[in-house]
Image (cartoon, rainbow, N blue to C red; front, side, top):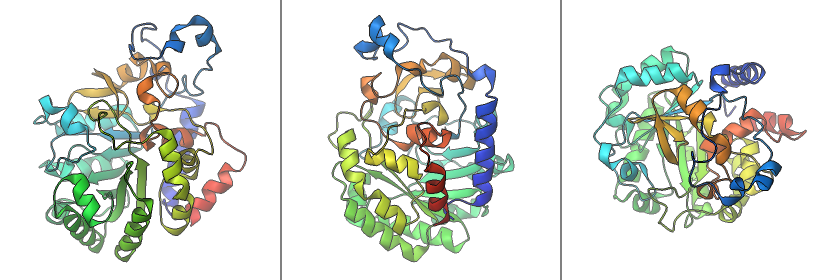
Amino acid sequence: MRVPLSQVAEMATYIAKNKIRPRPEWQKNLSGDDTANPFRIIHTQIPSMKAERKPHPMINKRFPLVLMLEPLHACNLTCTGCGRIREYEDSIRDRVSLEDCLKAVDECGAPVVSICGGEPFLLPDIGVMTAEILKRGRYIQLCTNGMFLVRKLKDFTPHPNLVFNVHLDGMEKNHDIAVEREGVFKQAIEGIKAAKAAGYKVFSNTTVYKETDMQEIWEMFEYLEQFKLDGHTISPGYGYSAVNDREMFLTREDVHEKFKIIDKMARRFPVVASPVYMDFLKGDRDLPCTAWGNPTYNVKGWKGPCYLITDAHHKTFEDLMTKTPWDHYGAGNDPRCQDCMVHCGYEPSSAYGINAKLGDPFKTLSWLLR
């Protein structure tokens, strides 16, 4: 199975409970209506147009699925498509304490924690942090460029709820170009080999850009088969404020064209994107953005509204949920969202069952059992 049956059952139970009885303190809407988001496009400001807009189907049943935990933004690489080291340049040396990281995990309550950054393996206490989050019964995807995996494995213990998610954007030549340093691909592969040999679960983590050759990604997945990876995560690259001037990012039309191959890939390799999200990438269905499903916590607090756009930082998770003008974001509401199709905003929508079709349960079951 692509995802352990126990995890599927726990996630399904969590989603069902929260959809039936969402926590009321997260459903208040305390944001100002007219000035909270100065970037919203004009039709949201015209009363007649605003009246025609349908409310988001989950706007009053908000709850998180995956916490994007960024304990630091420092990194040993300067990847071309990374906005963190640029957006947070003034706080690049700051770190979230272990205590505050665990507080965020508890405050949010999301069943999955993606520890990202920056490069999390630069944290001296990353092993302790991971162990403490696992004790809380959470599932962890620890995102890394893989360069420190070999030397850092001693700080961890294999656990069924822990996955090392290693960044690979292509074969050796193009991956090293993307991360702006030679030799990174080889080090990442050595890290993958060491982690698998030690009994850890390992995913690859790929971002698709305008110049990405999807046949090369296929070739990379074939190459990785020898190491018996447990899954492949893949998402289109989207330009946001810190890096939006670069011509490497995809429009929605670009995404549809690039991801025509995704079904074939998912039949051949253990791609862990859900089939509903993959339909969205191909343009076969529409999904609204549910950014609150993947909240981000970093050195400045709870990042609002989402992983990619920063209009505010909030001190508490409740403030993020209640003071963010959620109905001002998403394609058709904010020009910055127009081309976004990344998984952190849309995988939650598929998990919530928004715009579900009759055959979706069977499609998902078939995908899980491959």
